[in-house]
Length: 232
Ligand code: C5P
Image (cartoon, rainbow, N blue to C red; front, side, top):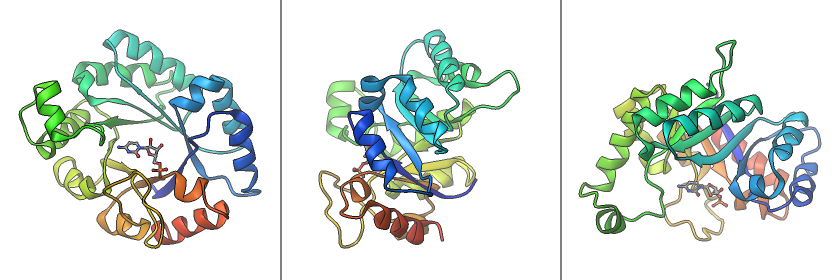
């Protein structure tokens, strides 16, 4: 599995998204479509971007009873996305059902990646709100291991956790890491950040980059810079 840069298209309309992608002319970056754009435009936005030749990570973070997740994953699989995700907190049974639903009659399926604990959840909130009395690190690694047991392909995690996830789950278990910023760039609301080059060194398989590319004066140049630092 090759390393790649995934561009987070965190836009709220088709028009904004297409205007952004039009900048790239011949290039076809791997794009992430999240809840905001998907709920605004529906599955047609996935079909349209796919038809333009992009790979798609559909970031909808499913979390429900196994039967519902299985059936919903079957629908997403027919949309022909390349990668999608769920919450590992839905249990191993839910993740196994997801794999079943995602697998097409010919045996192929999109990559399936688990969210462990959201980075917006602090250890304190996890203890007080969720009554989980373990360290964040232990919980994240345990959920990653559960995802591996269920047959998933990897996890979304901080680049700072990628090395440890590979130690616990093996080097072939994918780490998809947001929180990437250029050394001379604005951190915005991200707290624990890494440059594309550092993420490469620490072993991230995919970096997810939003505003450093989408809000750049020259988005194509910013994308090329990510590719140069992370892939080449
Ligand atoms: O603009 P920025 O580069 O911060 O965008 C990062 C993308 O990764 C956003 O779509 C954000 O929702 C997503 N993400 C994240 N942290 C996580 C999981 C997803 O920043 N833990």
